[in-house]
Figure 1 (cartoon, rainbow, N blue to C red):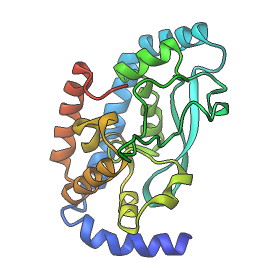
Figure 2 (cartoon, rainbow, N blue to C red; figure 1 turned 30 degrees about the vertical axis):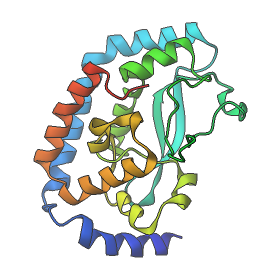
Figure 3 (cartoon, one colour; figure 1 turned 120 degrees about the vertical axis):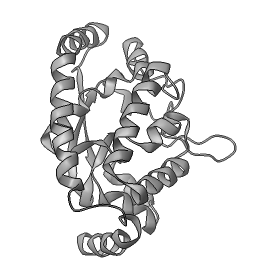
Figure 4 (cartoon, rainbow, N blue to C red; figure 1 turned 180 degrees about the horizontal axis):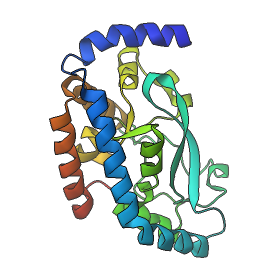
Length: 223
């Protein structure tokens, strides 16, 4: 699998990374470290309050850990605040991770997921459940901007060209996040992220970060 993935990524880089300069990785890493450090420092009182609130609302850890995939197909431990009951995955009749509608469209999230806790619903609507992603940024697993990280077991459902998303680090936010977030189908999200990959520049990343702040404040597409 590794050699096949390496070959496919090598072929895809010619198509999807035409605009990336040699300094792009270095500049984005500097922005990532400074940005994530400042955000964690400023948000530290809120983070502590949320840990207490989540623990009081439902039994279980405040931080949810899950394997996800980033650049080159590397699997890492993904951190976010827990928004569901601890035994949520033991309720198969209530939810399909890639839930589909009657029209056949496939989405990543349900607007009214019965597995969410009371606090979890608020965390999702405000997007603060993703604040622990900043720890992943400092660890080098993710970048502030990039395609959202996928579950390893779902990569088998990707088309060959979709694997090009593994040419760059997974991101806390991205072009798909400001284009519709949870309102997008799986195919729409992948298509938008591939478009981002072909246009990837530091200036575009900064514009996405600015638009993300607006999208979060307005609560667009978050549930």
